Length: 218
Image 1 (cartoon, rainbow, N blue to C red):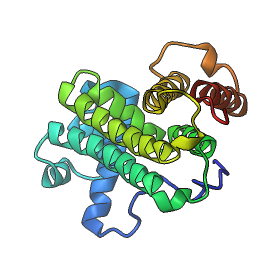
Image 2: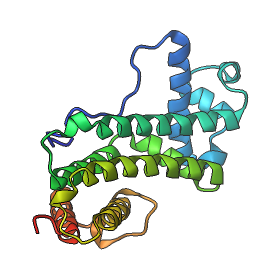
Image 3: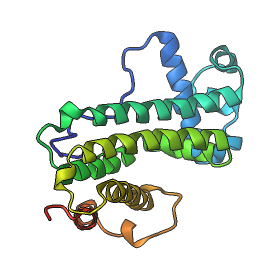
């Protein structure tokens, strides 16, 4: 768990105050997520999901029209959690007194922390959207919104950026940091040198690179 003071209170939220019906639905989503990761979407049958959740097949159909609806609900729960995390992180009040380097450090810590939280959920979402252009587009939009929020926070401090084109430099750094973190944390990416070092070393190198690219302090 990250100890970064800017984002220490952020977390992957799941509602703990649920009715019995909502608890059953959550159990079905949890079971579906686990089976999708273990056996793929095709192997996660309604019967197996019901067995894993400890309910009847009829209970599955009470909550979801069919398997596709259940799979989409699995994906939606992941994207809702990511959107909520983005909203928490994008609050300007959170970053009062922060400098650009603090923003970048917070972004890296948040992404690394998020990769270790809700892992089964995100792996299931990755498998579901692998062959679904609509789901891919939805996930891309959520990432775009998060990046735009970070961009706004950075450019509000453009006086710290020594690069002659702060807008381009900030966008470039955000894109490249995102790619580096994906290469480090995505289990479906090929093995890379970035994945070989520990989090502290990775963050130090990434921050030094970003600061150099933005020409912070020049």
